[in-house]
Length: 442
Image (tube, rainbow, N blue to C red; front, side):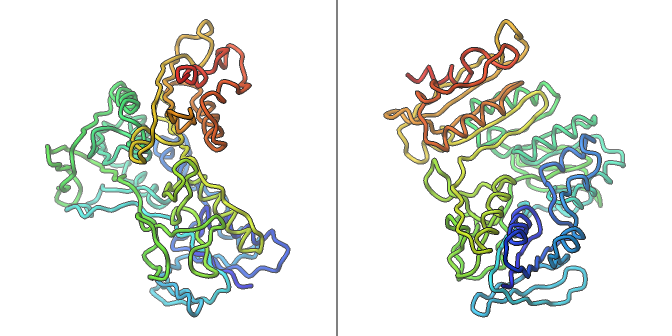
């Protein structure tokens, strides 16, 4: 069996390793556009402040390891430009030489990931304007920081934007975030996002809401960011306004979603025979929305890749979907969410209500230094849990994971009260904060 995998990162190599571990003889060729395999993108912002020593530290396995230990034909600098399902052929070019290539497959996995959205702004090619997606991107930023960089402008106040703002701020840069909308972290409801904004102000990070970037100016190096409202002097710009799935090379035979992601079923199969897809280029079934969604995260990429690999090797494994769980550290705040926000529930025309409380993550007599704001969204008639958002100084991860598990199993707010959760004064009160919130729904 000849396997071809497009993409050498989380989903692609999770799949490749499942095939390697199968009993059948494997012939695996992986086509990677870059030169680095299997690395943790999520760790890259922390190299800016030195929490992670070097960008290369996030590499899980080297190309040589895949080639020599696991006998995978791991190609580098191989960019796929076309897939022809009628002849089961993949075409492309080598990015370092321009040489064309083609490979035949019996089964194909598309795990090509996603790339940052690059707006068509004048001056985006000036020196000092960056995006962060790869290890080379990160090394370029670190190298540029050796210059006399004082003012950093970040375009976009989402996950990467906030992580980069924190890390630039930690090394003494003056940070300004330009956000097109009226809040940071748009997956959160606005009342919760206000807590994030307050933390940004405490840390001296400036946030400009309701401003759209028009262009960048400078002779050779970026000097100003011009928006529809004002001009800002800057020495470095980081653009983080979302990602697009890398699916331009697939033809009209493939079913594509609203964001150009490949639509897959529970077995990670596309609508084209013998072609699978996984990770940031593929859809994810959302268990609460009960429909396909596009939530590109490393957790999903690894799980989908593992399942795709099992099925490519002849098994019949299912991906049971997501509930939309994520977490972020932003200076003194832990910021977590899962399931639906009020905005999403309203968009889906659900009959919902919500409860929000501010409490302590530990017994109040043990410490009054930390706070936790918990918001849960639930279905009115049934009390079925729909989602949760938690922001605070301590213990957010513990509670968000409990809510994520409850959502996965379609539990109600009444069920939350029945949970036997751990308690000792340094860790919790006798009623956990999510149970305190659940009480308010009765």
